[in-house]
Length: 347
Length: 144
Ligand code: B12
Ligand SMILES: Nc1nc2c(ncn2[C@@H]2O[C@H](COP(=O)(O)OP(=O)(O)O)[C@@H](O)[C@H]2O)c(=O)[nH]1
Ligand SMILES: [Mg+2]
Image (tube, rainbow over all chains, first blue to last red; front, side):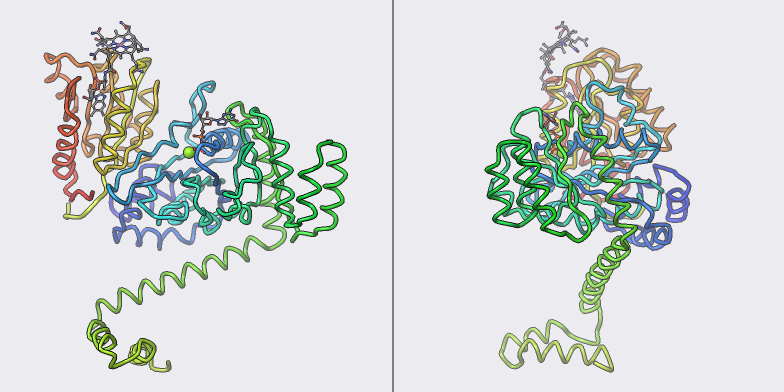
């Protein structure tokens, strides 16, 4: 398949073309860049939803059930699921697809025309995503999926990269994870638009829910009141008061309890996801944050292009300049200023 | 095709009612350690599901693990569905593992299978076969 066929294929609903495009992009073939350039005008319609959380909390199970739920609401769903790839062997076992449709269902998702699932290796990268996840999402967006679900690696380190691709970030936790310092360290309590306490069947979900709500308020007083309150009614009263006190920027991240493998709480989660998207659109935040992300992306591309240019050009002998600096003949700042001046007239 | 590097992606699939998944899991893990990106389907997939996964994941190798004796019908079904979904099984390296009587090897290969690996095959043999056959089929270098 050549670039023309692939671009045409993506825009006319050919899944094989989409699959091949992701391969080109993932392996950094020049065709990949060309395809991305050409499909860009068709992007921006999908609602990109990220889901992050420690390994085993149930991310893949939630993704599977959410896909079923969105399909029943008439929406098409693209999925990118990232698993860790070894930086040493380069190998990866991509096991998220395994969880698509639980044992109790009729397994239609795998061949559902409105679903596309792609597994990706992180290829040793930290942060929870693969280097090309954002581009894969863009290709799916151009293809026309209504919702794109991104499942992060879940390696437990700080996995905050998801906010660079997702409009709505879901942080999945489970009971007995509450008041764990690990969670604070991971920084994931700062990125969630929606929190899920999965495995509510295990008991202790209420406590975790309370703890998350308290943490979200970043209010020491609240943390103490809420974690100490055991009576449900009292708790409701206290939360009400505290929520009144703390005015968040228009969106209070809901905490939703689920039993994902049984599908419980999934419709509520889908409702919250849709509500968040509505909020982003009506508040103007969607346009605003997407613009900020594009700005960061373009600066990254610019820096990369600069690097490539420095390696290629004969206008500047970068190695020689480095030599000079290493002999103390020149300092790094002056050296770079000289380079800038020779590239840009008005620097 | 031009010479270029590509990371090899392998689908390891179990088709039908066959519940023997030890071999498939062992092979999947060893192929990962050999540097491949491996997608394991889990048990009891239909030929359609395996074919669709092969297309969407754009794999270079389709590995089907079968211990049920139904390889003669299930393997061609998978390959036909890959074609139906727009993929090209001739562009993929097709492997069958598990229980296949040796006197059926030729017939199975004639149906589009590149390599057959029965119990007792050292995994290194499977790894070498993939590293040798994929570049030939796809005209590209192996990155691992
Ligand atoms: C363990 C076992 C079971 C276990 C399975 C446990 C599990 N979760 O896997 C249990 C007890 C459940 C079981 C049940 C049955 N089994 Co049983 N079982 C075996 C046994 C003894 C070993 C299989 C095994 O795990 N080997 C170890 C693994 C590592 O080896 P492997 O799977 O062969 O994999 C190697 C290669 O085949 C190849 N390979 C395998 N998959 C793949 C995939 C790819 C991509 C590649 C490249 C290579 C590859 O590479 C591997 C490494 O060398 C075999 C006999 C035998 N010696 O093979 C019978 C055997 C497979 N079973 C058989 C039968 C008939 C059954 C039953 C129907 C009833 C019965 N008689 O016991 C049930 C059916 C269950 C079902 N739902 O399908 C027959 C199959 C006959 C046939 N097809 O002609 C066998 C051959 C026994 C026999 N001689 O009769 N079984
Ligand atoms: N008890 C219980 N187990 C669940 C629930 N949701 C998922 N699981 C199980 O948890 C395990 C890990 O799930 P998975 O979705 O793969 O987690 P991931 O690593 O976060 O993607 C699987 O065995 C699931 O069946 C739940 O609500 N309750
Ligand atoms: Mg998972």
